[in-house]
Image 1 (cartoon, rainbow, N blue to C red):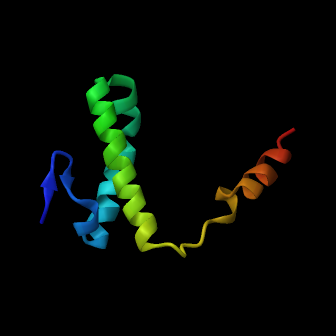
Image 2: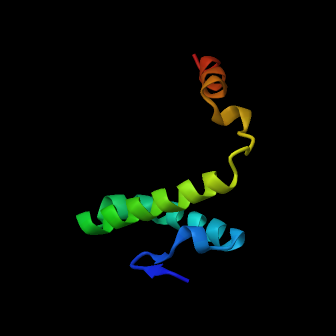
Length: 81
């Protein structure tokens, strides 16, 4: 398995491990943004993109939740006036 500074290549991860890595990186994103060095943030951003791109590649036909679309968000906020 190819390894790089940020861990195993996303394409080589099994589905369960890919999801686990996505959960972890999303959980640590805010702290890295606020308190990480510029290099740490750049590395985090690169790894986040790699993992997300791989997830989308594997699941191109995933069904978005209606509330997570633009029209769903508009409908949600239009009732808040």
